[in-house]
Amino acid sequence: MLAVIQRVSEAKVEIDGQINAQIQQGFLILVGIHQADSESDCQYLANKISALRIFSDSEGKMNLDLKAVNGQIILVSQFTLHAQTKKGNRPSFIDAARPEQAIPLYQLLIELLENKMGFPMQTGIFGADMQVSLVNDGPVTIIIDSQHPN
Image 1: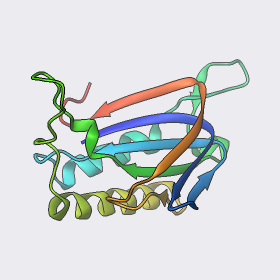
Image 2: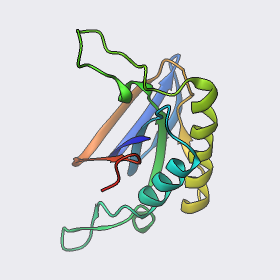
Image 3: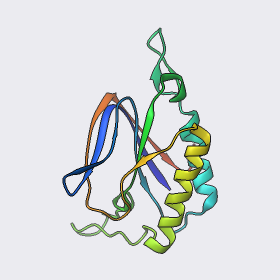
Image 4: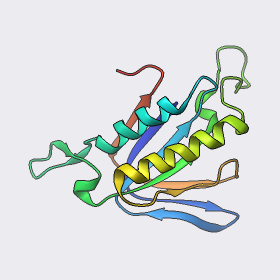
């Protein structure tokens, strides 16, 4: 499972011209679910994301987590994170999990994050055509791959 975590000063998700999710300070997280992913990948990501310290303290060091700054999260499923581009010019998405596998894992990740963070996640809609906008603060973007923890 891949997570692209962007520290934002604001972000929103629009679907069919309607705002579906909107936050101020926090994380906009794009999640790509791989066909090899399982519940343990969700647990790993929830643990890492909930403890990630990428907000500045009073000395300007990235020392604060999301709770310390009263931040929020928008979580968006994005299968294109698993694009293979080695051959040709048209990406292949063969490694991305099919919806029947991906949707339950996406919902589990939402549930785990809500339990760890103590507040509801804002989300996109799985499989919808979404317009995602954000102001990346920093910019700070962190990529976490549950299949290759480091």
